[in-house]
Length: 357
Image 1 (cartoon, rainbow, N blue to C red):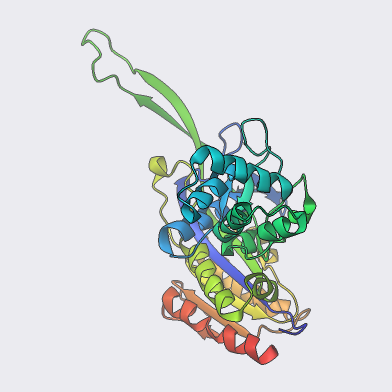
Image 2: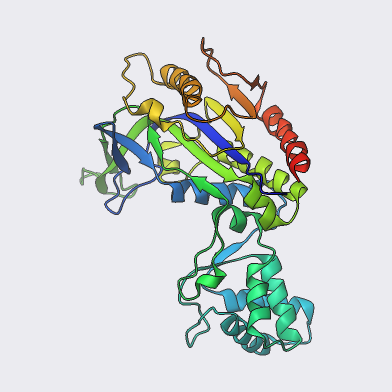
């Protein structure tokens, strides 16, 4: 591509029943102050983890591994390439190339911090180890080139050696409720099935905090950066399709067995822009107030805010959306019959990028 910029914005309205999908260090659901009131909050880290898990479970894409056991991972690739090498020798070879590439390990061959490593990168290091490569620039290139899609989307930070950092092409916002919330408490007891009849009472009791909310969720992808990272337009478009699908269908798993909060979005809207990414969270700076549910007004405000944003930025090149809510104020763009149809139409981005290349 030339210097043309291209961004993909993803917006969602999603309601959750009583739940605690993302809790703080005290076990309370995370919250944030916005517009002068307390909102429910689900951190970007929690949802990015859910998206990566969705990638693993629902795609055949080769993905990265976040681990301190990078030496073990590279050693396994060495043995795959040359089965005559035993594990002890492979570990020595792997530690040597890993250290020379800039990742420091302790006496147990464990990295000092989690490292996000792609399989193709691990295989490149393994090949370098087998041929006895010692050039640090070559070894660093093994860790920097050919990132997997999750590394390209979410980035990688290496405190010991910033040259190994990978800038994220995606940004994921902390999801917040469109309205004020209050945390509630569930008092529970557990019975001892083998308790003698003359010993009444619970075997255990406690409390779980929870809330319920209608969330505004937002993420964006710098498409031109994703193309640069993955090396070609076709792979970037397939990664975008998977990202939109995972953003829509993933769910953080905090306390999910307790609350079974397996919901789906009421609206997904994708905007493709050539100027800059635009969050529409300002639609909810004034909290939604209602005694008849929050979803419908939240959707109305989302679509309205898109139109208001055009006072400051160009209209999107493409707008695709799928909604379960019948609203009077729908955006200019294509209303899709399903998420699958929306994702299929994202293929139009490939034509747009090729025209700009």
